[in-house]
Image (cartoon, rainbow, N blue to C red; front, side, top):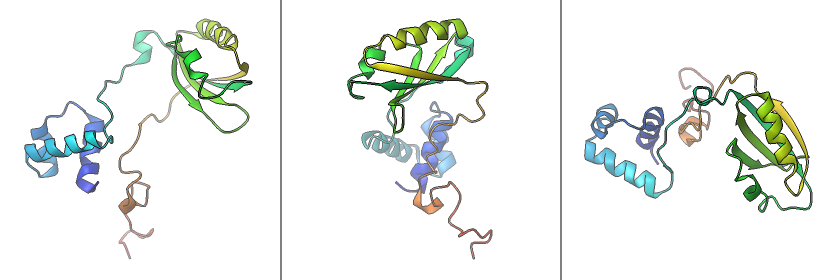
Length: 167
């Protein structure tokens, strides 16, 4: 991937509905060249899918929480299937530390969170849960395609060795 691919990814991340002609103008390329780059990035698996971002609050999911789950006697590869029936569980991560799993859940309110937690605690192998309710989200930006670019030192900022003029 080159800098043009990274700019293309950043533009698509901002608005995946952008037309190839608009992207071509932005990147100083032809529309067919942009199309070829997008197809290459899809084939490489860099672009996994195109989706929409929904506003959970507008859909009634006003409460977000992170639930740390301690398991016992089950494999972290086997237990995720037990969470499939619960659409409130948006993310499930296996983690290092005292807990085995970290869940991101969304519910209507604290009462529905309480019901969900009771259901989770009944899953075979779940020993304990610790829940943190989100009061506010300050940053939610997803993956920045420039953050891992070697020419930006992995920080999205140019390779200037800490000096404003690059010296």
